[in-house]
Image 1 (cartoon, rainbow, N blue to C red):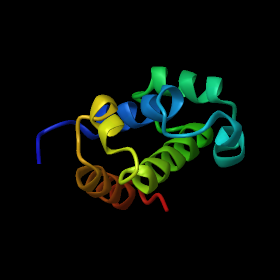
Image 2: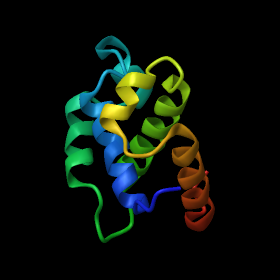
Image 3: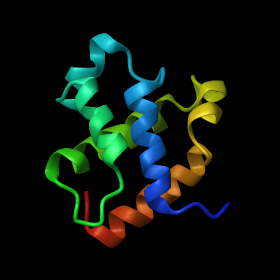
Image 4: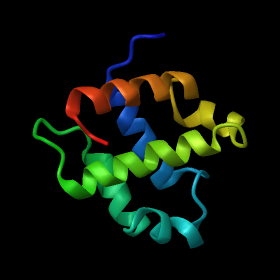
Length: 103
């Protein structure tokens, strides 16, 4: 796996769902519980040096899950938005969840 800090990968994931083709506009609020513009603000301000606020943590979780569920269908677009493969994102996410006790 290429060395890419977890926080950078998560920032890319947040930017990808906020600005990319991975979540249709009409489904965004239903899937994330927030407006796309709020997700964009979270993406742009990530990472922080403080523990994640609840909305940022939930948005990150939803972003990673959405990206992993869409990876096969949007393979070409994936490469434009993320510097890691879906398998690498899954590994990073799993490690981060374990270290941070985040379900």
